[in-house]
Length: 252
Image (cartoon, rainbow, N blue to C red; front, side):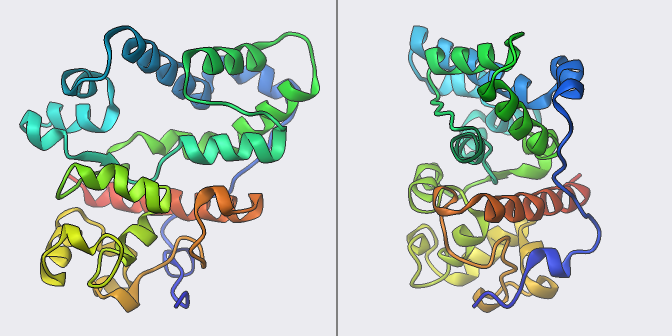
């Protein structure tokens, strides 16, 4: 089932998750893309807390929906947007695994995380969190780019694929074929193939041949992100970076 690996077949992009030292981390902290992402999460959570969630706010503050709206899509079309590979679940899981830090998408929790990152007093938590941030910096640079956005056939698929697969795109595609857990979003496999090709997801199939057995796996198992160990998560991240960069080159 997992004989096809995206990273083995894709040679255009090679991405290595790297670690830099703590002192260097302090110097580049203000430029950290990871920190900027956390700040944006915090802004969005505060707005939702104050005003409540609405489609209008999502179009303004959610990067994926906002991207398509600015590209000239209608509001309804833009609200079908989804981020293909999610950042938060991966980041949150690695913080727990490698820093012993639990974080949640609430204003209080995100503010606490930012304070810990910016703490001038060296402590185990700050050092470990910054190490995780450094490892994810390359991933963070591509996560909110057009190469990582897609339009879903139905809006409800957004929450459904997260609930079932924590946004793993390879599992999303595998289970969208006939008989799969997401197959109900497509009347038949031919419509699924057309959607995959339209969204430039066919690069996740061997030789671009869109068939279930040809899926190129970002990781050679069916684990959710929260079920992976750290080494598996980093393999998945490197595959995701290569996928996003390759896909971005194909988009106008």
